[in-house]
Amino acid sequence: MSRALSNVSSSRQRQRGLSLMGLLFWAIVVSFGALLLIRVYPSVQEFLTTRQAVDRVARSDPRPSSVPEIRRAFDKQRQIEYTNSMISGNDLEIEAVGDGFRVSFAYDKEVEIVDPVFLLIKYRHTVSTK
Image (cartoon, rainbow, N blue to C red; front, side):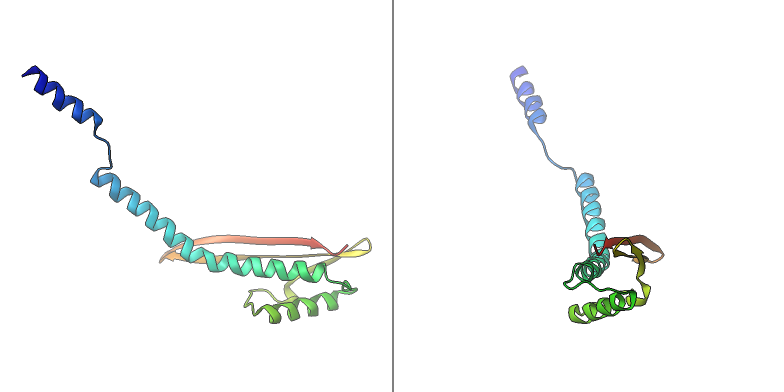
C-alpha cells in the first residue's frame, strides 16, 4: 500500500503544464500585444516612409542647394512613394550648417487602442545634406 501512495505522489510531482487561469492570463497578454501591434504598425510604417523620403532628398545627387529646393524635392518624393504622411515640405525644419543643410522633422501621433485609451508616440528624425 505504501508503494501505491509513493507512485501517486511521484506522478503528481512529474505533472507539468498550464492551468486554466494561466492559459487565460497568457491569452489576454498575447491578445493585448497583438491589438497594440495592429494599431501601432501603420503609424510606424508612415514614419519610416517619411524618414526614408527625407534621407533620399538629403543624399540625392545633385544635392539641393536651397531651402525651397529641399521642400519641393521632399514633396515630390512623397508623391512618388504615395505616402499620406502627416508632414509636408513646409513642415520640415531646415537650417544651414557649414556647406550643407540639416533637415529635421518631429511630430506626435495619438493612436487609439481602445476608447478612451490612447497611445502617444513622438516621432523625430534629423539628417544632414553634407
